[in-house]
Amino acid sequence: MRTVTGWWQKPLTISKNVWAGLSLASMNIPQVLGYARIAGMPTVTGLYTVLFPLVAFALFGSSRHLVVAADSATAAIFSSALSEMEPVGSAAYIRLVSAVALLNAVFLLVARLCRLGFLADFLSRTVLVGFLAGVGVQVSMSMLYDMVGLEAGSHNTVAQFAGLVQAVAHVHLLSVAISCVACALLLCGGRFLPGRPVALVVVLGALGLSWLLGLARYGVTVLGPMQGGLPHFLVPVVSWHQFLALLPISASCVFVIIAQSAATSHAFAYRLHETVDANADIVGLCAANAVAGLSGTFTVNGSPTQTAMAVQAGATSQRAQLVFAAVTLCVLLFFTGPLQYLPRCILGSVVFCVAVGMIDVAALNHIRKESPGEFRLALVTLATVVSIGVEQGIFIAIALSLFRHVRHSYRPHTMVLRPDPATHELEASPVRAGMQTEPGLVIYRFCADLFYANCSLFAEDIDLLLCNPPTPVRCVVVDCSAITDIDYSAASVVRDVLFRLQMRGVRVIFGRVASYALADMERHHIAAALGEGNIYAQLHQAMASARQTLAQPEPNSRVADSL
Image 1 (cartoon, rainbow, N blue to C red):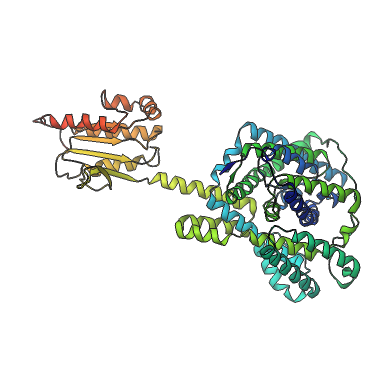
Image 2: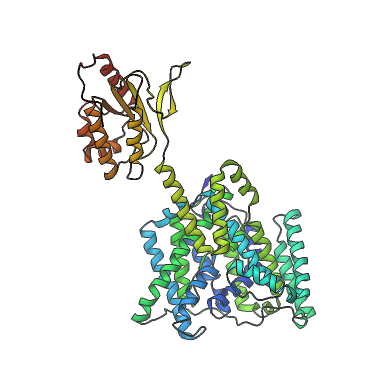
């Protein structure tokens, strides 16, 4: 996999990124105008999110493909909270929205200083496949409303589906017909003309036909008039009381920004066999939100849908996003007028086709065949995104991933090493009562760190191995190759096990003890409980010492064999 540290470091095909940027602009400019409606902001501020913020992330971010722009998740978060503070669309409301974006930049800077990019490491490929599939289902369902000429009454995907079924008799047939033709052209173009700007041709063609034929007169919903011009840079000033009220709103946005952007950039990096620097991306997101707040627009975020559009259009670097920003600049200066004729059903069709492409059925099928447990995790992630929301889906996916990991650590593999009859090399066998490596000797391996949740298994296994052995056990060698950390609770259990074994006259030796595990053993007084000469860095040294014990005559009297 190629390590990506910056889009400027590799020679790229400029013409391909130019076409990709043009296609991206044709698909996304109408979409960000819709996000401005969700945010409760003037329509033109949607274009502002793909002007300076886009350039800022291209300069400071790491991902070659992540598109940072307006996003429905963060827009819904701050708009629902701020609408209770000031009237939506008022000058005071706009000032608060811009202040939230600036606060986001501050929080993101703190996140970078704390190196919170590591949170992306908790997003496994399984989770990312489910996440993108869930976003694909969610977005495609919401776009169906635009495609049939209806207005969605809810942001919840399940409610949208139910509403669409109930309103099927009220669909606008001409909008449906236009959407079907557009989808057919887009899907056929993607199959037979890969890498060509088919979406750009479809959008421009629909724009021209709408203007010539006056589709709005026939009931086809169009974007409508909007103002143009460049944004004015200023620092939004809020009162101390408002500042305190904005802190939890901004914190919520930042959690979603970090999680969603990391999930999106890593998902496409995995798909395209690349890597990204999550901490560098946080710097890019910080810069993007800073210029968003100063330019009078709203919070920006890494968008899975728009990133999928960029990849599908053939973008190979952030140069495509710079072309997108340049097109946005031209639109703001000269072409806001023609945009009013663009049918919403065309926009819905373009986004619908991209969203369907985000559902990687082949990857889900591979996961199902290779790891049914992880496949179920992917399905849970998908279902959560669809039924509850993107941000909740990400956090639940991380929680489930951590739970799955802890579950494996809680019941780790444990085994006894025994010589193979054919090769006489040590082979691992599951722990069973009375099992021995050789008469009087047990070599036991615990395949995880010892901590409060799994230390009881360590004690249970030792007791089980000493239960009715064929030959009295005189020495237990613990293979510590997988033990790198021992916490306080586990250390107490280990010391108790050592005491009981010593009372039974059983010598305990630890082998393959790494330096960091040895430090824990000394700090928790395990080394003192073992006694000198019972800790070795290599297993063969521990076995040699154990055989010396076995070679010595067994004491005539032993301490009572009881726990």
